[in-house]
Image: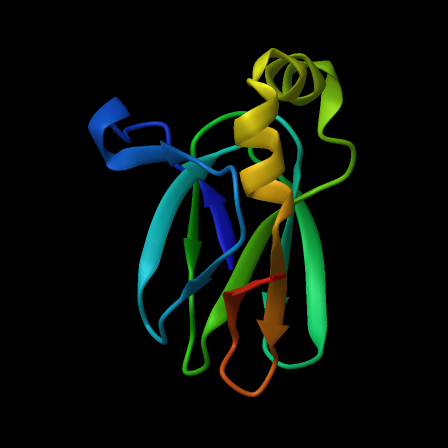
Length: 110
């Protein structure tokens, strides 16, 4: 499911910040400063380290990947640096996961 790719160029790799679903038989190469949770939908998962470029391949079913664990001081520092108006706009939305569709949607609070 996950493998190290020493020959992967920097252009082929993206840094994983938010959850994503990999389509059946597709692959992506990622890095992440946190552990990555790799879920074979709907019910099994493994955790992998992706501090080095790591290619994750889906089999016949979609695979969901997401950073796992503490967001860290960088996130907190970034959040605190936002203007209050922007913080308010972000917090006015509910991020709802639709399990039957395997995706996230936003809903306005007001």
